[in-house]
Image (tube, rainbow, N blue to C red):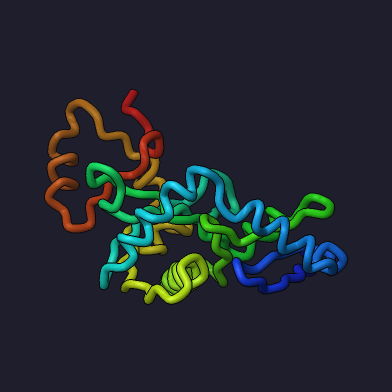
Length: 198
């Protein structure tokens, strides 16, 4: 049986806990949220993200986390230095939120880099990105988010994740590498995500 999850919405984001008592002193909860909202790396990245999100549309590269239940790591394609992908945020679906709240007195804060989503459907991922954008940059109209790979490749149920995360491309696989390079759906995963060929 899953523990009940309580939440409260504050200016910077929602806060989740398995005990209503953990959310009872809103001044303490606000202070904790403010302290955890953004670290130094986040504060350095936020202006770059805001500039990229001011466009009418952006491509989001999405990757599942390493352990089930999977969170989704999102990157803005081409928004980083030298046109590299720029980390946007982690999207946390209900199963991952529940796992994060397993410890006694655990609290999860939506932050500059964490957004809770309803499920792992494409619509929920896009809606989560839009909520994240509005929450972190109030007044900024979210762009159209083009998610790649589409979330069905993130659920682990159809083998697509194994193909995306484990398929080694090495010496002798030039035809495969060329096919990926010519494809409109090609994306470059973060370093370390693709296993090196043995």
